[in-house]
Image (cartoon, rainbow, N blue to C red; front, side, top):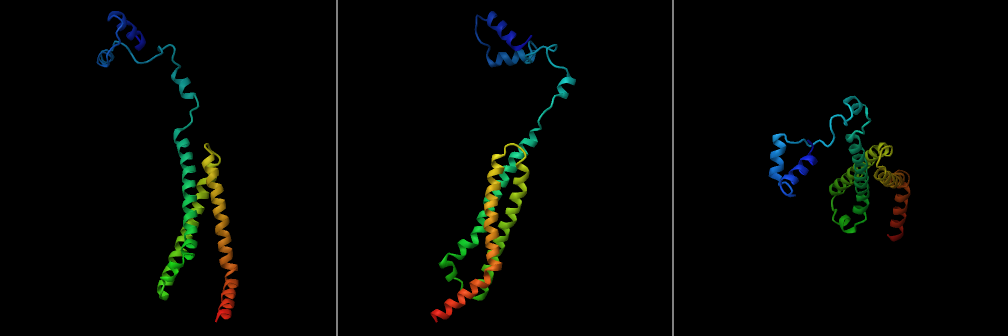
Length: 180
């Protein structure tokens, strides 16, 4: 007997009253009915069920986590690579540096934070690129665009540091001679 048949039988014998949860549990425990909706003849055989393709749940979860991870990593990398500029352009922070040791420690910290941001940028690319080939793609696409924008910023900053450093020192020396 199925669950629906038992409920109909219960309503007929008890004047149309619905069974209470306690009565339902007791009948289920006594074996008066089973919770299966189909009879054994209607159910597909074990061979047919095992051959049906199933999408692995862990792969779907992992791919969405990759998209989220790449988005978070690209945002963190942007913050860490932007932090040195925020520190440098804050005049009150630079005025507090009095000794050469403080300046060297601060510059070491700024470089460490910047290169940590660059490392996170590489990791966000590593997570974003494989996520583009699996659904959902929208998070990976946003992370990849954000990472490319951040990569262009890092590249331009490094190119300026390597190539424009001599021009900057020449400009500073020129301004010193003009104002002295």
